[in-house]
Length: 265
Image (tube, rainbow, N blue to C red; front, side, top):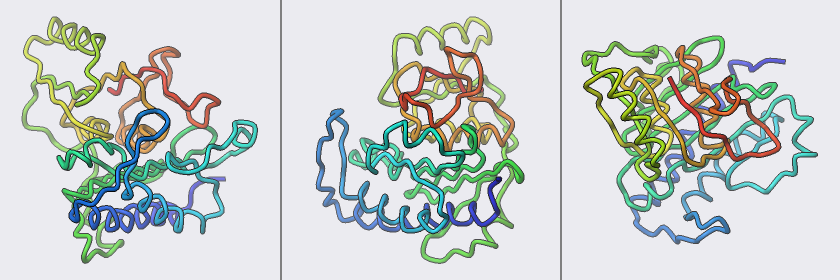
């Protein structure tokens, strides 16, 4: 059982169509913010994106684990060989701040490993997508007028050529922990001059995949839906997402959906 090329097309389409719904709300300014049980914000754009994505992914017959979907007990999930993992808006806080640093994330997992990843940045039109067979790519999309075949044909393979070779670390805009600062200092001791870039959402994983950052240390909480698509894109571009506890590549559809700390490099 492997992913068909149609699964990648379905995931890309779902991401782009959900982004149209998100941008409509983003530009209207009427977000209808609620606070969830874990104190994280939820907007009507998260819900709209979830509904659009589900309408596409349900056609594949593969179960879906979404941040905004129902809680699915592990005893139900553990038998799943394949599943979609979805974050309808990764970076809801960034969405509310209107800084553009939010993404739509869809990953297909098989036997706990990400085999397809799609991340779209609605405000900039940047689309990152990958599969185990094809590798990882980036292309800019006009949401008003796109052709899926043309997008795939003109996409650039990742990582891209980089002009500035200064060792670059990308870190979280909202979760800069003491441990992260310590890691940055260690890298300065090794490499001398180090660039530190702060970004929101899974853009940090995308920066490593495209080669604009050398690493992304994450020593603060994340959930499976925050990282699955980005891990697929990074791995398919030749990088690794290492679980800080196991020292192995991070796995998915675990009993505990909260990720351990990790390092992308």
